[in-house]
Image 1: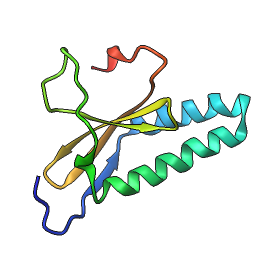
Image 2 (image 1 turned 120 degrees about the vertical axis):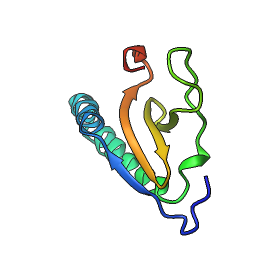
Image 3 (image 1 turned 45 degrees about the vertical axis):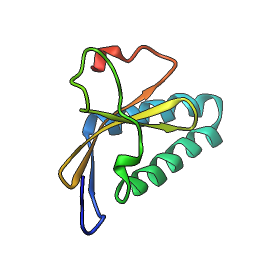
Image 4 (image 1 turned 45 degrees about the horizontal axis):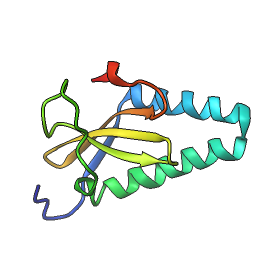
Length: 105
């Protein structure tokens, strides 16, 4: 995708925001620092998607159309699942890679 200004608009869906909060809340029960790191990493990665959303690999699954979603790893165990449409990046989910997230797809 060619974006002359190299500036994308990032939209975090309500569902993705709720998933992030749920993961952070769960982490905080074990380590408040880990929960804060997850939130900080999410914020930093969202910022990078404003410039370079295409740098991350495609999410490959038989149940979704090829080339629809990309994935971005957070804190080694969480994925941001997003799609790019023209100059907008839509963050659709934040999932724990240790759990089955096939229901999303």
